[in-house]
Image (tube, rainbow, N blue to C red):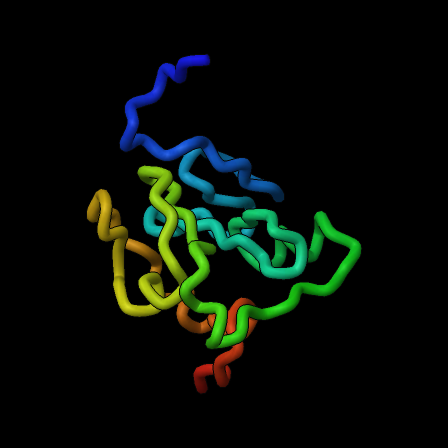
Length: 120
């Protein structure tokens, strides 16, 4: 069996939830830099945000522990590159395509990863 995609092109990842475009934006977060989806630890499914997960799943979200941050759980919606949690937490954009990520997402990190919430 042959594939029509190039060897270095990522396989398409299904993003669940209220997705509104091919860059993983959703009805809740759809600004120009809202282009990531997160693979939720609890169900191994990519969602654009915690609200999309809550609306689509019947279980509560579980957070990634620091010992699991080598997992490739972040999807760049611009190019399809997946980043490890460690990698994602250290950048402000995709290392593969250069697209900027929403810096405001850091305010919600405690919903996805075992970290202390940021003060407003």
